[in-house]
Image (cartoon, rainbow, N blue to C red):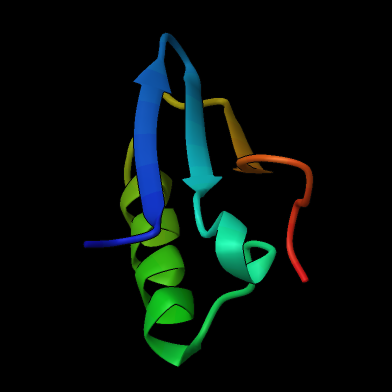
Amino acid sequence: MSVISLEYRGRVAILTIDNEKKLNALNQDQYYDLTQRLREVATRDDIFITLIIGKGRYFSA
């Protein structure tokens, strides 16, 4: 299961890192997943803002 989720709210794309046990740190595969999802967002003309957030107390370690 991916630790990166993507949701759309109107013209906003929200990427959430959910790996709290590791302070939302990303390994190489998870970083690749994040970049792929960012590329997906970049192809959409209707998205004006992209937020990258971390679940829990930490954004990322």
